[in-house]
Amino acid sequence: MGFPNIDKILIKMFLAGFNGLKADPSPLLDIFDDFDEADLAQVAHYITRKRYNADLRDHEEGQVYIVGSFPRADMMFPQITVNLGEDNSDRYMGDSTGESIPVLDGDDNLIAHDIVKGYYGKSHWLINIIAATKDETIWLSRCCQYFICLGMLELAQKGMNEIDIAMADLRPDQQQLPMEVFNRAIKITGVTENTWKVRVPVYDYTTGTNLAL
Image (cartoon, rainbow, N blue to C red; front, side, top):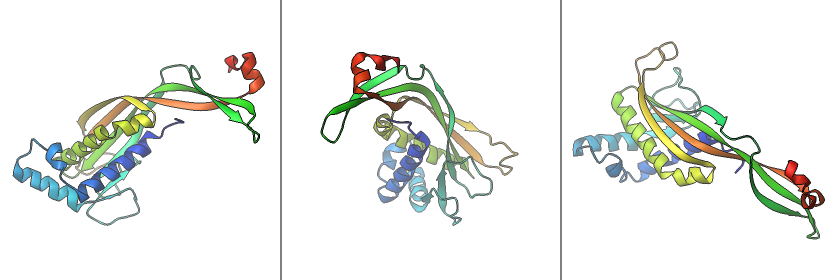
């Protein structure tokens, strides 16, 4: 699994999800099934006419920034930002041992074993949806919530499991964002698998010396 960079995965997931809705907005019927026809038409118009961009150097209007930075007052809104909130191990590092992978030389002789070591971390990521109106934060956050639910298998394949989602409306720090904007935050909590390989020569492996690694 390595050391999964979940914030990067989420940014790509959101970009692909919103661009997918632009091409085919039919999932909005499910995402906003509690909206009446007029409100749903407003959401569809908003989602499909926007451009979704991860490049902060692009200053054209009519786009939603989806980035790995903190909310920025010098950039246009809406902004969807993804940041690591906290990451700590809940089991000792190296305590979890996975598969043993044989290592062969050019003549197919067994020369070593790669032992997969690892630990599990309890982590959470903060997704801030910041826009000029409350409606926009609701529309964008509900889409992000939908993309996360659809992407649970992908997240599991990257090493993140036991996912929990929490949402809240937050008042932005007026020193950082002095203008009046709205912020709906999504917090994703999960258990991440972090692994690395330790190469053990075949002699040490067969004698049990590897048990100390």
